[in-house]
Length: 368
Image 1 (cartoon, one colour):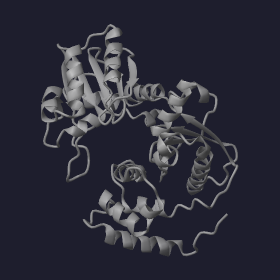
Image 2 (spheres, rainbow, N blue to C red; image 1 turned 60 degrees about the horizontal axis):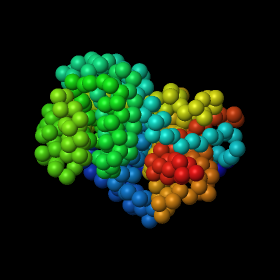
Image 3 (cartoon, helix red, strand yellow; image 1 turned 45 degrees about the horizontal axis):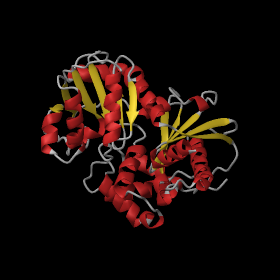
Image 4 (tube, rainbow, N blue to C red; image 1 turned 90 degrees about the vertical axis):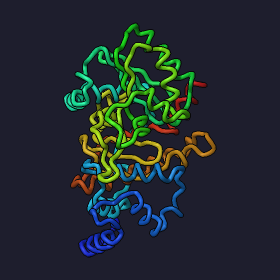
């Protein structure tokens, strides 16, 4: 085990002093511009090959927020910097790696939305004037950047590969056909998630999709509006505002809790292949970073750009996966040590991967 500095307190105090100087607005938190400045000064950008720097910084900031208050304070940043990933070595953990399918994600999102966070989500909808969560006349469309999920209170769960950054008219038609094929009619359709970023902090909590499509004629709002209006001409179709207040950096309005990781980290709705694994630690590995959870609590986040490292040239480099998993294993061991777990023997770690690597892996399997 590598030695830690004997003057760790002095190092911590020095870091705190330096970061206070970097904290340009003096609010005690690290924002994206300040994080960018620190990482640039220490040469991180020269060492790493990140496919999307701004997206990576956003995800790193979200991951470093270990107390989930919506901010990254200086203490959280120092804890991440001082994490010694070389302190522990090898072969004490049982690792299982799985690519989550889009259907897996949709199932876990539904569990988070209608079960794990049902009370909070019900309160949010009621305060927005939308009625109860279990209203059978409502269709929820979670429009992300690359995929869209559809849910209702009667059990509908669908997922297709189209979103705010991925235009796929065929997938959108497939989604609408499946919704109509279920035989249900809806009085209201609410679009949530990334599409809500198209709205402004000055907008109300709900904005008609017609209005948003007029404002942004070349956006996903226009694509979705054209398809949904044709399919559901009698329904009220609105977008839930996801804009952030520029002053507080928080969402202007409370957001529905439907992140699949809420279910993943509690072991709910896991795919059949890992049902008998019973993990102690769950690693949520997306495109540019991974989050580590112990007993449902996030204990750390690390940058690892799978989009660049594993998907070079648009091909999944499967031979590189073991190397990436070993790096994740070392990080998990260091985090467990920090949590006071001196022994890791027989601890089970599930690495659940999404992002571009997942898409390439599953598309290859489908072609076989």
